[in-house]
Image (tube, rainbow, N blue to C red; front, side, top):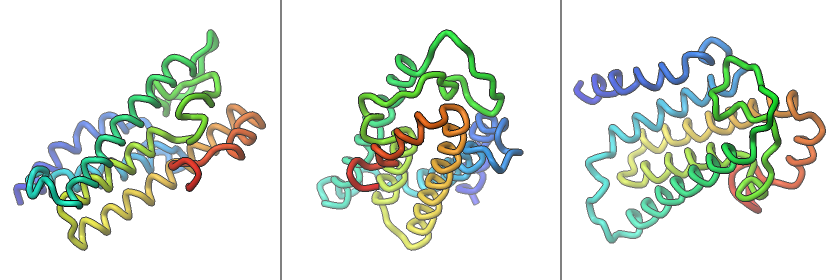
Amino acid sequence: MVKIVVFIILSIPVVLVSWRSLWNIKSHGFYRFFSWECILWLFISNYKYWFVDALSVQQIVSWLLLVLSVYVLVAGIVLLRTRGKSKQSREDDTLHKFEKTTELVDTGIYNHIRHPLYASLLFLTWGICLKNITLPLFVISLFSSLFLYITARFDEKECIAYFGDKYQSYMKRSKMFIPYLI
């Protein structure tokens, strides 16, 4: 019961951040919301296991994924802020300010993967799941991953609509989440 109450309370900021896209099923933010909720449930379920058996292979892999998650997130945000803007503005009320890029970013980490911020959430999902794997949390992690995949697909449709052929060409030379794999 306490877990559910904490989940509801911590979901309030997630809803506040996501409210613009919650009513638009064709927006990438709609699906991202559900991934965030899955990640929140994973965290609430596994926070007490973060330092249990710290030197086990499972914990080491978990920490590597969590550190990788932070690295990929920071690298992606820095490039979006420094390379993604131009003097023109992008009007779209469903996008957050940092998402309103007007220049296609395809350097740095974006040279290898199109969605480092979603890749970061994937690494976060599985890093948290590995803290204490149970069948229900494994299934929630699969759902989070599925929601992130759908989020990326809808984001790509939005990018194609905005950037056109330039983005489609970029898609052919980059991977979605993991360089050389996916």
